[in-house]
Length: 117
View 1 (cartoon, rainbow, N blue to C red):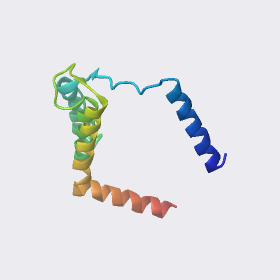
View 2: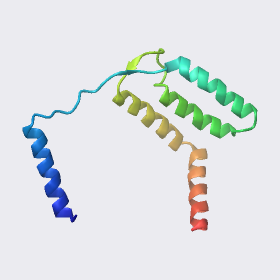
View 3: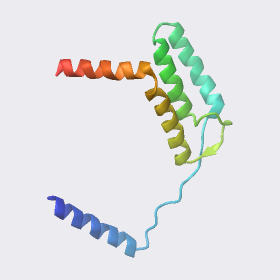
View 4: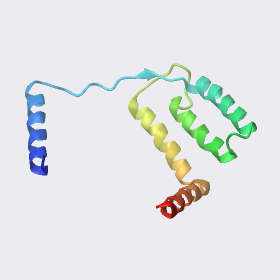
C-alpha cells in the first residue's frame, strides 16, 4: 500500500466511525497498590541488593519503577486514571534522566552497542 492509499483508507475508516456515532471511551479509573505495594516490592528489592544480585543504582532505578507501577504515594486501593499513571511515569523518568549515573549508563550502553556493530 502506498502512502496516499493508506491515508485514503484511514480517512474513510474515520468517516465511517464518525457517521456510525462512535465516541472515544471515557477514561476509566482503576485501583492501585499504592504505599503498601511499594513497601512490599521494596522489601524484595532490599533483599536483592543485600544479596548482591543488583547494584545500588539498580536498586535506585527499581525503586522508581516500583513507585510508578504501584500508582505513587497514595493509599492502597486508590482509584487513579491513565493520566495519573502517565504523570507518575514522566516524573520518575525525568528524575532518572537528570541523574549523572543514568547519563553514564546511557552513554556506556551506546558505546558498547556501537563497538558491537
